[in-house]
Image 1 (spheres, one colour):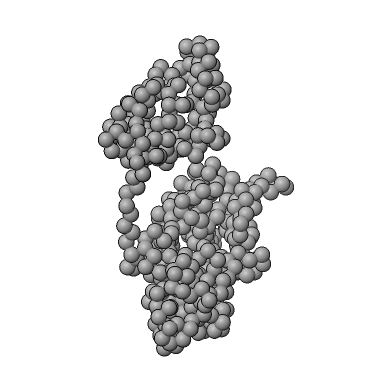
Image 2: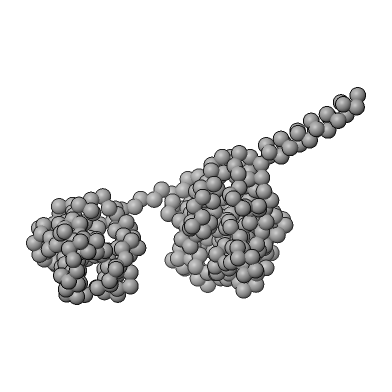
Amino acid sequence: MMVLFRVFPLILLGLIFNTIIANAGEFKPLQGQTALRVCADAHNLPYSNDKLEGFDNKIAALIGEELGIPVEYYWFPQRIGFTRNTIKKIDPETGRFLCDLAMSIPAEGGMLAATAPYYKSIEAMVYRSGEGYELNQISDIAKVSKDVKELKIGLFDRDDATVHLLDDGLSEQIEYFQFMSGDALVYPGRIVEDALASGKIDVAFAWGPIAGYFASKSTAPMTVVPLNEFGERHVFSFAMGVRHQDKAWKKLLNNILDKRKDDIAAIIDQYNFPSLANVKPEVRKKREIYKVENGKVDDKTYVGWRLFNSTCFVCHGKHATGTDRAPNLLVRLEGMSERAFRKKLLSRYFAKVNLDDPDRRMEFLKQIAEKDAVEFKMPTWDDDPNIRPHISDLYAYLKARSDGALGEERPERLEQ
């Protein structure tokens, strides 16, 4: 009997231990990672707050659960300088970054490397329900103002709806709100929770998650109208952000996001984001890279030809077909986008000797040994005020040549 009492606690301990392991998920934290350290705003619902009521708080908890480590926060107002003062700032006492994960950053990244997106939304219009009128699109505001009552409109500075409202002659009915106040406790949701609910304004425009969340929490019944009339171009996706050098961390987060995507979607659903059903499809015209008619070209392509023949020909040859110093650009531009071309010119090439003047560069090439000439790298144009503004022009000329739309001869300008 004594043996049984000794064995049972061991079995129980094993069950508890296995439960912890199961709850930790299939992913392991990175080496030295003892906590999920999140950068967030303590007063920024529906995203986050220090009571952990935001959807980003709950998604961060899910990630911590998956890794089997606690979640810690470094609080800082979501304002200009947020990234610089949080995820990219080093604690002078510990030598470590203040935090390792920023939530709800644009999926395009920028200052941070973005994970796969985990939600998207669009601008929304909110108004109090049951007051004798309906608003289904922006133009309805002008109609109701004329036929029923003059509606007071609240929107943030630089709001997407501004131009539409001004075009409808509603400038005198608009009250502008400051999006980023100097007070860390002043949050965007006040436009719905305070101004609209109290009757100070009759219609509010806000970013979808803010509009949907605060309208659902209001004691005054409200209707949220997603501005899907704006079209797909105004639907923006958001991701998590890490430092560009933290590639393993980004990969780990992407794996977790993929595994827990249904759970994340369920969390998002609790916050009443406006529907993205029936978003107006975006019809985009293909941008004309260059224009060539009977050997004559548009101004952009002509400027590109002139730039090539004043600078690039020295290494790439008179007809851009390459030399022993530099490759054939007509072949290199096959299938290359303008963005890739620009990135290559500005970011990839670094000169051993920066010789932007063609004559000086030619003299330099004559002086160095043949083996050095082969290794010579194209000068970086990043800081050249005469070249950087015209990279798009250069691309247009070389792309026209690469596509076979333009020959080797000097082009003439099309009459405008």
